[in-house]
Image 1 (cartoon, rainbow, N blue to C red):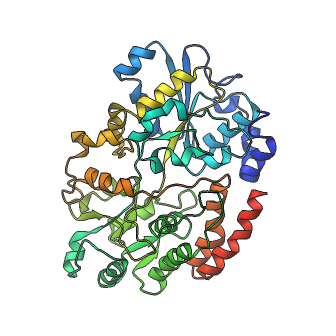
Image 2: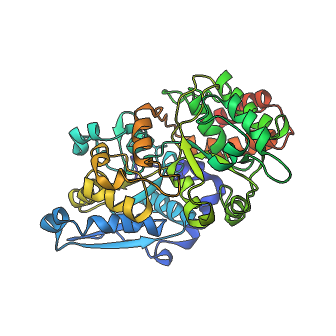
Image 3: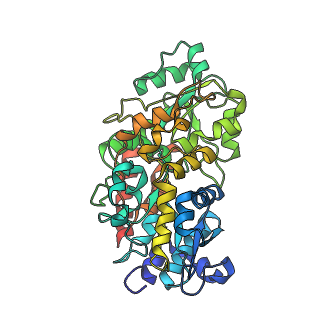
Length: 440
């Protein structure tokens, strides 16, 4: 793609990590053909998660799709996360072999916006008035660059605080918590022996990312400039550090090389009551009903407490968008698949029923399925809680180095601070130079 990603951009996107993608070649990974896309009357869809592939497949069963494209064949290919994104970047740089539609995870989209023109179709005009029916910070902002929308996601990743209500009642904690100081006080009562309130991550940026948003800031401003060393970001990281080493209501989250967020060891620690609270989006909370079934009815969900910066009641963490590549030979049908999956009640409710993925599509919140009480979380109506918080989602500010920066942030700031080896202010300020070098 002479006008899009160059080979230099490709190598800058991930350094040596993508050399293996070149070596593998397209055919060895089950590529989509020499010209890209699938050709006449067919589509190729690449995904990195079976659940998300099934979400897209469900759109093919709708009457709207069958009436418009019933004779079209859609070929789904699922690859491991790293391999799919690397393979997609390889195909887009080479100008051949890319699918019609690809799932692009929020942390990887920045790798595709380094050239003068993006290798995905601008969907802004196609979306049109539907943009008013979504929560943009979750549905489109992460896949938007220079005021053009290149992807659509369906998941409403409103972050909340969740905790064992029964244990809070035992120690006489007054809930719901209004401030983080109240959380710390309750945590000091609950944290006894091997039990802690929180499991905080030292090998992942997620905890800091959520709290910095709740504080009213982000890693980059709306012009793509690094602001990760401002007062709010520093205070959020210092607060996480202090929960481990000062108030001692938190421990370091179990992690493994293949999963720094919530591997089996992390989940089993909650089952063993080593940790009894967490904060995160719906997809993070979803492990509790499946992996910690015996605690059903004991958990409660609420908004994020105030006390850090602006004290916003929620944050936005995670997401995957569906993008149409410029190599697609059937762009209209490709976008129709995306629209039906992400921008119709039938499409998003199908994913909610399959994966409990709360949708970013506003009209769906009137559907009875999202109004039901959740037995695991004490009979709360989670759909209503998320819907009430959604208008307060902070905007997402994209940058061509967003993915690289979050990886570097872990290495140069999160890990040393959370391992009590460096000061939060010094680490985040020192990281500024690294971000500037990434932009060169």
